[in-house]
Image 1 (cartoon, protein in one colour):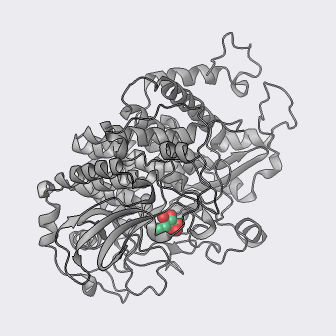
Image 2 (cartoon, protein in one colour; image 1 turned 90 degrees about the horizontal axis):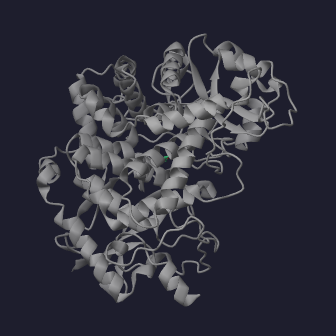
Length: 610
Ligand code: GLC
């Protein structure tokens, strides 16, 4: 056990840049470690501060002292990595000089009395940049992320003082669009190091490719020398998170950001690094591993994404599927061909086809489809059943009948045996457009739907996280009476300004930027006056969320990304993916073989085999 553990549990991050690359097999057995962390103090990446405690920080001397990083060989290689990271931190992109000239905190300038924003949009943007810069977190003197919220009046910080992977994405994109690349590069490389960190919950270890939900930079006394301190990167893979939720979306976002970094900077050397390639493969391996599933969608527990609390989204939630698809497309673009990766590429391609077919066919909902479900036959035992998932027509909720406009449609929230979750989830729908998981027609129809349902989805502040809210008995049973997720609050029908950036990318991709412009204009009326809340409550988003943090970084960054992209729409290409012809061909073969489309027609001669 000890010997194999040394080999198997070595950090896979940059250590493999000069170590051997483990041969990759989709069928390799899962790695298990029954060694719980003996001490929190010893976790994470470490950076020794050579100065005595109390002195100001001048010259970081980073060493890796993590539990799994102790062999001389690895420490030596870690130093190479630190060198590599630091040598790229010269102020070539203006970040350092910008910081030097940064104005003092602007909070005092904010109007808090609810009066109309008198300043122009430029001053809102300037304020947003100042706040975003103030949220930067440093490790060994280098910027590596942004803290989730910087609310000076919040009485309970919980984990909002951490760098969340998903929250950093709009921050990272804002910095990329501004030409400030180092923070993104550092974020990518340091989180990669954390990916392979030992993670356990009550002696159980999740898959090695898992990326943390968040991490924190801690300053702790140096072991054995109390006069010295060191900085430690302390990741949370869900083992400390409320509800112990697994952050399935983290690794998917990491891949998406990595591709955006390469596209935006033109620097593909980061994605080509052996350790980064290994990191991508580790994530893919975790997602593509065989399980019990009948569906090509990713099976996850409740709360595994932006909605990180119990909200009845366990199973195959759309948000995860859209990010999964997007990450597969991005990874395919970045993977460098090499011996032993054929199986992975094949598995990835097969999954892309099956996943897009499954989502486009079975998640799609519009008037026509509702009518089809309304007239479904049930209990169809056969290979060519039309109602494959045995959906009982009585499941169609009464709100939906009036809600669905004649023009437009959307992808439903979840699909399980005998269960369709008809709720509209914004992020999943928007990212399906961005990644081309939805067809071109579906993408336009989703935007038509957004326009038709503006009063419900945008109202006074963009954008509803989902629609409608669960109320009464349904709320009690499905959320477990969660007092934070009461109807029209937080994840349960609350409105989240951060979603502005995804709305902007989607509408620019479809050549309809005016949708995003309208939403941004609306947000600008209140967002700075309200101090950049995390979310808004009520059906029309009229109140600042009951427990919403103020100065929430991804509300600030989401707004900035929307503004930057609207000013330079071609930059949205760093984030979007177009469907390629191979996928399109495979998809049309599958469509013509689908019984739903062929009932009454002659059987297709040559069904496409994935
Ligand atoms: C909340 C959100 C989650 C976010 C975190 C930090 O828990 O639900 O998506 O990452 O706050 O902002």
